[in-house]
Length: 531
Image 1 (cartoon, rainbow, N blue to C red):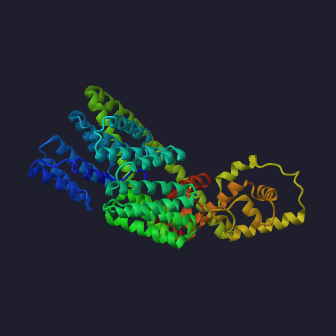
Image 2: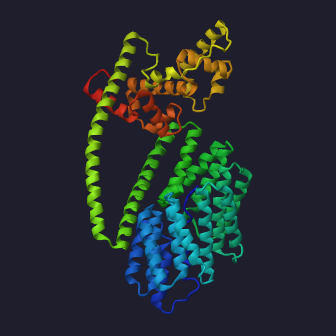
Image 3: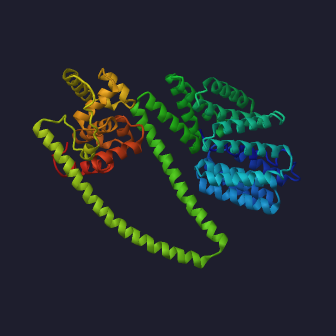
């Protein structure tokens, strides 16, 4: 579910629909301001905002110009710049005593911080928006702002994993909107609100309610002239795709999700692209389309990089603002010097630590390679690769002498376990102790006994060990595997999480998968012993 409410399309109407311009210059300014929100090209929207600011003659016009700029940066997923401009709008609104703009600015700040998963900061600004909303002008436009604030408050409940609180909040938002005369804006707001409600119903497997919410949302959005440049169509198709996936209607899910991706990419809206890509990744995992997953992961990686950069930029921006407010330049310099010294010591220590770890990694890599070579020489390639874990598991293996099992049954189970391993059934990402016991035609107690006795391990480490062993041998013997992304290798050997795969690989091999691949590639360039 997207963390941010819709972009500030509403600003198009604020203080323009109800206030008639007193002269042609005002009319011309408001017309350009209105058109800027219809721009699909974000960079063009930014140019319009800059141009409007230069032409601004009043404080209200300056604020409107900044709203255009802040909204454009939000669409670019450039949260740090968007936040900077919304803070400026907030400051200007306070001085000029414009409570409507002040409420809107703080609601938008809450939404931007929520998008970055900075929940405490988001709550701080929504509280400020609530306080400012007590002085709202009472105009129709101010009611729309208040509705936006209710929606953002509801979305924060999702971040707190308070589903019931979200449903209550979003329904309050919808009830409030129904008190406003029906028009393009209320239909649009209701459509967006129903979309978010449908998304949560999908997550909670309340599929009939989700279906109803999505179709109600579609009806409201169709009534509005505010169209797809704010990506509500992409979010609608995304919701329908997730609903179809829950119902195991995978072909229908594929059609909807690809349509959502097409709209989001066409509008270059990175925020919507991000949530749609996440859902496509989930779809490709469900249908085991690893080629599609590999392609979509490339887009996801670029979006994640933008998010990480924005968090770093935002942290740096907030840091500078805080010191500017306190006006403690000398203290800042002392801190900077101290940090530099600590950083220098840290970097030096890190350098020596890195060298030590690199040497350790090299030795472990050679140990694994020697073991693999020995297996090839003896023709015993099916035996497991060296495992660091097995060395310390011996003391943990329990005594099962009290378990009554015949020699014939034990021999049969050992044979079945070897067949399970040779067929690589441990690669099934849904494998479990009962499922494996079913494969061996036994119960879980006998299965645990056999694994402990003949593999010196418990079930979890047994599965992890064989999965890592499988991928290590693939990387060693088949060079094309070294070109795959870590996330794809994780999928191949049964892990849905990149980080879990990397942690288990490191635990079992005492070397990270990326380091292992890197050293394999270097060794292949230096000599012929690696294929």
